[in-house]
Length: 405
Ligand code: GLV
Ligand code: MN
Ligand code: MN
Image (cartoon, rainbow, N blue to C red):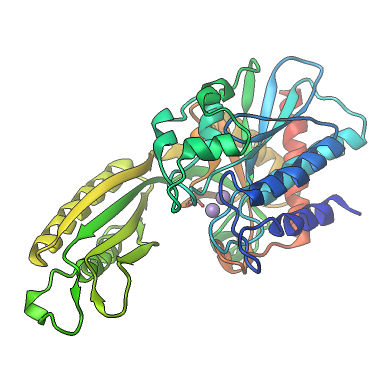
């Protein structure tokens, strides 16, 4: 079987590792992730890598080279709820395929390659981001271990139950000597490459993002007996805020902002909601523009809540600055794309990636692969075998150029 077909098949196999039958939902440190680990570690071994897992739960496959420096490749193997097959797994599978090609050719490069399958990029279980890559970069915040999931399990308990030692996540920091950088292949998750009829694109920068949780607190009341002017309806206040978020993003060039979670408490048909909890995700390539918008939105949340006679509290869950990819590695990737016979298209990423966290450790570069209709975070995510073949070739050429540079 050809490597591109193997890559696509592997993404399909991984899709079977899920918490929700009939959908792909693979959160941090769960049985679904254990299932993914079994598959990925087997594929890494087949490609000649020595495999270990670290305390936070990343899988690390190492392919030795003739020299002491290391190049890191990889992406994440967790998912959002009801995800597609390729967001994350494609990058891991393409990285393993590139190493497999070296292994099949009996070749060693002047540097070692370590393929990292990160255990949490999406933050589905704990609302955080980049738990796996932060651990490797040495920026994991130990205070995060006190976060709880929807079942009140702490991250500390989850890490332990998954087989790691939460007290030793600091040891997961890269300690393998000199690094040449980190290169991540990922589906584009947007429509640009398809519009330009290009199989792959070169990522120039990644937008910054903030994630907050807002909790509106009113008074639960009887839906049949409480007159409209006596209510302290937390959900109506939250709804007003959702519209304010949309207005802010539409009025700010280059901004995207999303309320992706919203729950009413107690959540009964005949109870005026006494509570409402929502998520706020704000992104912009310019960090100062993003910060100003977030401030405006939090101030508006207070105004809207006061107008509805409810209270509101906000909590910052994650914040990541925008990032420029490494000119040195990006130039090599650019030459690799040219070598594949395709024009080089540079684009910025609105999505967050492990490369953001890894940039605290080393230089980073990213290659995007066209996806059908730009659809992502959706079961309809799709890539073609031909585009995957280009991605493997480009990554392989990148390894060769790096070994000559
Ligand atoms: C990761 O998928 C993100 O939310 O950007
Ligand atoms: Mn994603
Ligand atoms: Mn992703």
